[in-house]
Length: 226
Image (cartoon, rainbow, N blue to C red; front, side, top):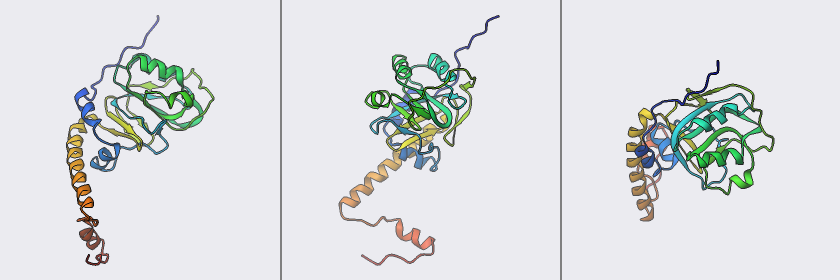
């Protein structure tokens, strides 16, 4: 008797929240989320101009094997970010131009892969957002099982299906779906506060107002009066 994969059903962060999130840098979201949620710095964009935002379609694979990655490509929905726990392996690439072309044609939002990529010269000049951990021309095997649409850990960060994944030139941050609205509200306030601080600096007010109290709290001497 033949069995088959079924298209997974899980609640995704809404398209409206994804659009709101795109207004913010990953650094802003990380800060207001308690300085948590950022993937290890080895996971970086192929091109610093690349930006990604969307709900997580989670994948876990054995190092060097991309069979479940291909399953995810067949089942993910438009707008999803395929995020792969590849164990940080850089001994071979888990994907290249062919898989990226398929993802683009399927309307996916991007790849975040804790493993190596290849075909860098082509992919880095493309429009599809790709975040990976290293480069290697060697291709993967396609013979080992794994999981998809299950809770995983990617580059030190827990990820649930449907969580918000956002990446830019600084790296990638993951915000749990249930926290996204609260985090975005806090990000709006932080962004407004930073705008005020930039205006203060432009006026010549170079010392941050909080610094005096922070030095006192740390038991350190105060700065000399201006």
